[in-house]
Amino acid sequence: MALFLFSRELESTSRNGSVDSQQRFDRTAHIMTRYTPVPTRLNLPATENGVLEHWRRDHTFEKSVAQRAGAPLYAFDDGPPFATGLPHYGHILTSYIKDVVPRYFTMRGYHVPRRWGWDCHGLPVEYEVEKELGLSGPREIAELGLDRFIEQCRSLVLRYANEWERIVVRLGRWVDFSHAYKTMDRSYMDSVLWAFHRLHELGLLYEGHKVVPYCCRCQTPLSNFEAKLDDAYRPRSDESCTVKFRLRDDVTTSFLAWTTTPWTLPSNVALAVNPDLEYVQCLVDGEHVWVAAEARLRFSQLSEPVRQVKGR
Image (tube, rainbow, N blue to C red; front, top):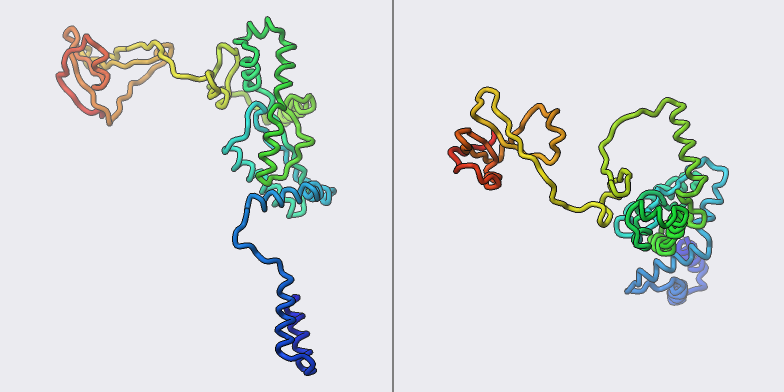
């Protein structure tokens, strides 16, 4: 628009004959020098930090929320990370998603308060405290004193709060850390129980069964995340049981199969073979026994194979 107005001014002056072409060129050059030169080398991290500092001084995020007070509400309370660890690359993608969606609804005119949160429940906090205090298991926790152990867990919750805020802000994400909620807060737990009660009243709850990992030491079920904590899941050698399944149509022929869960055998109704594996037929005390070719050497009492086929 400035260049358009300037061109109209030149056109008018030219018609009056009071400004020659050299003067018009000089004035044009003078106007163009008002624009800030663009550097050929950009320091993008410094530019980003400059934007973040401007947002901080101007309270841009807070203003974007406050100026839409009274508009339709689109509340966003962050599904919180565990309070016992530092942020890593896995949090970056989710942080961008959690930032883009609230910004979109803000631009749509909604009132979008968004709060940070801390997940304080589960084994991660207890596990960290056990390591710090040199404890192992419920008995030693009881000897220390349950009240003391719980208080130690509470003190651990906000240990990494500053690191989380620094990284999340550096990502450019807008979220309210000053009013962050914690799942150990009584108000939060009350709200969860209230919601659960309402679901029950509406007839939306049902009882079912689900197989989950269980920690005998901690005497509690484990989430998928908890099962992957250090020393919470590790390979181990376990006893197995080898079972002989006799053919219904030939009592002199059997299949060998092994299992680490023999208590499931009473309910077993079928035996499957892998069509891509090789199976061998051997002799034991005059009886024909089929076993996977790669497993034959585990059984020293088996003879050399008399037949080999693929499972079909």
